[in-house]
Image 1 (tube, each protein chain N blue to C red):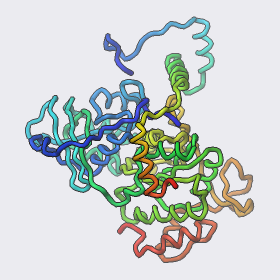
Image 2: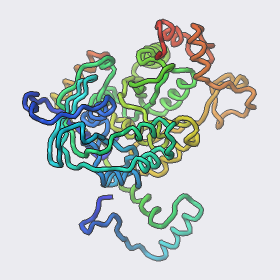
Image 3: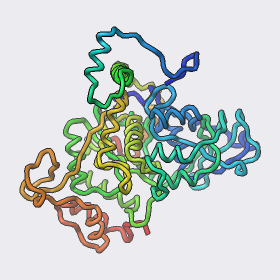
Image 4: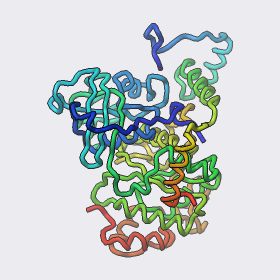
Amino acid sequence: MTEGKDGKKYTTISIPTPLAEKIKKRIEGTGFTSLSSYVTYVLREVISGMEEESEEAFSKEDEEKVKERLRALGYLD
Amino acid sequence: MPKPHGGKLINRSIKKELSETADLPKLGININLSEDIINISNGVFSPLEGFLHNNDLENVLNEKRLTDDTPWTIPVLLDFNKQDINEVKEGDTILLTNKENGVLALLDIDEIFTYDKKTLAQTVYGTQDTTHPGVANVYNMKQLLLGGKITLLDSRTRKFDEYNLSPKETRILFKEKGWKEIVAFQTRNPPHIGHEYVQKTALTFVDGILINPIIGKKKSGDFRDEVILSSYETLIKHYYLKERAVMSILRTSMKYAGPREAIHHAIMRKNFGCTHFIVGRDHAGVGNYYGPYDAHDIFSEFPDLGIIPVFFRSFSRCTKCGSVVNDKICPHDQKYHINFSGKKIRELLQNGEIPSEDMMRKEVAETILKFDKPFVE
C-alpha cells in the first residue's frame, strides 16, 4: 500500500454498522481473518474489474517492425 | 487482452553510445541478474523498472504486493559486496555488465541497504533449510542490496533468439492472429501425453495457447534446451492447429518458491498478453517443501491479479476409460490408472527406447532420440 502523506499504510473507512455485522457473520469460518481483510479483498476485486482492456500504444512504425520480425521467424504468414 | 501488470508495459532499453559510459564505475553481475535486467527492460517484469527498494522489498515479503498495492511475490534484488565496486553512493549511476550475454546496463542507485537472509528465505520459500535450492541461493547472496531503475544499453544475440519473443512482440502477434483469450503453459520438459491433454483441455475454451518453455541453467540429467524446443516443434507440427498454438521461450531462473513463484509466473504471462495461465500440481515446487496444491490456493489471495489461473490436479491414463483422466472425471479404481512418470519416460529414452504411445507421441520420442546427447551431463 502506498503510504499516505501521514506515513500510514492503512486508512479507516466507515461503513454502516448493520452491514459490518452482516459481513462479520458472512466471513465466519472462511479464510478471512477480519472485516478489513474482507473489504480489502472485495474492493481490490471491484477495482481490478473496472480496468479496461489493453489498447496498446505501439506506434505504427514499431508495430510494422515487429510484424516483420514475426514474419521472418515464421510466427506470421 | 489484459493490460500489462501495473497498467503499462515497461520499456527500459535505449541505444546509447557506449563511449558515454566509459567513466562510470562498473559492477560485474551474474547471468541470473543479467536475465533479470533484460526481463525488466522489455517488460516481462512490468511494472518493475529496476531492482527493488527496501520498502518495496518489505512490502513484497509481508504483503505479497509492491508498495502501490500491485500484486508481486518474488523479490527482484541486486546484491553486491562493498569490495566489488569502488566507493559508490546513493545518487550515483553505475554500469552493470555480464560477459555471458553481453548485458550492459545503467543502474541509477536510489538506495543501498542491508537485508536479513533468514527473513528473506523464510518468507519467500517458507523454509530456512539450505538444501532448498532457492534458500541456498539466498545464503550465497552478497552483503548489500542496490535499489534503483535500470536502463539496458546492450545485450548479445544468443542461441534460441529466434524463439525469444518480448511481451511487445507476443502482444502484437496475438492481435494479428485475432486471439482475444490466450492460455499460457509453462514447461521445462519435452511434452508427454499428459501435458498435451492439459494444454488441449485449456485450449478448448480459449483462442490460442502460448507454450512458454523456461530456458536456462539446467541440472545434470535434465533435458537440454534444444531437445525441449525441438520436441515441442514436432508436437505442434503434428498435433496442433498452426493457427492456435505458438511457442516462445522465457529466459529466467527457476526459484523453486512454489506458491509465490506460481503468482510470479502468472504475472509474467499476463505481461505477454495472456488471459489464462495453467497451474499444475506442485507448480514451481521442489522436494516436499510445499503442499501439492499450495500453488493453487495462493491465487485466492489475489482477486486483482488480472490473469485467470487454470488449475489442473493430477492426471493419468485410465485403462478402463481408454483416455487421459483426472480425479474429477474418472470413477474407476486407481488400479486402472497409469501415471505419467517423467522419470520412467526419461529412463526409456536414456536407453534409446521409444516410450509407449500412451505416454508420449512417437514423433516426439523420435525427435528426442535424434539427439546424440538429449540430457545435460
